[in-house]
Length: 184
Image 1 (cartoon, rainbow, N blue to C red):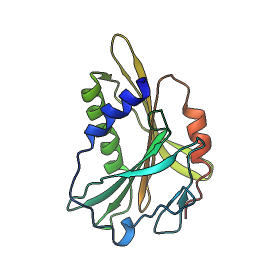
Image 2 (spheres, helix red, strand yellow; image 1 turned 45 degrees about the vertical axis):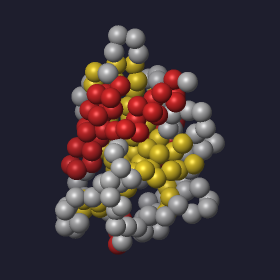
Image 3 (cartoon, rainbow, N blue to C red; image 1 turned 135 degrees about the vertical axis):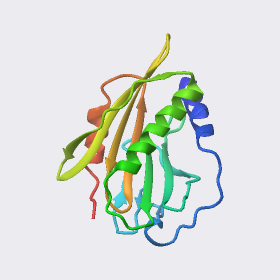
């Protein structure tokens, strides 16, 4: 029941928007194998739980186009989320937009759930051969604590993974999964 409540709190953060034009670099498909196929041929595999990727409405601005996916597991809150983003000006990816995206996610989620946010501190790390920006944050009130782990892959399209866990220590499993990505 708690997992469903978390999901219900999460969904209103992402209001429906006009359909996003999915042309060019932002074109993303979800083939029948359960992964997400990016335009450069990179496949985001299913998370190692019985579930599936589901797309929510993305947002577009004059500069960025984003797509938002949840990995939904029956009867649980989302196992992990993915945002893809394309800079329409073709600027080199540096992760600054994505850090703002994560901070906005945390602020919006905490506000909707009545939780206090611990400001995330991003650090550069390697996951296998790939450099990523990662951070963790704690959301809490007097009775509960949630841990949020975020990983940013600055590239085109950029990839931002966010996972919410009810206990600390979920980072290892998430990083094992992220190391399975075969980025192109």
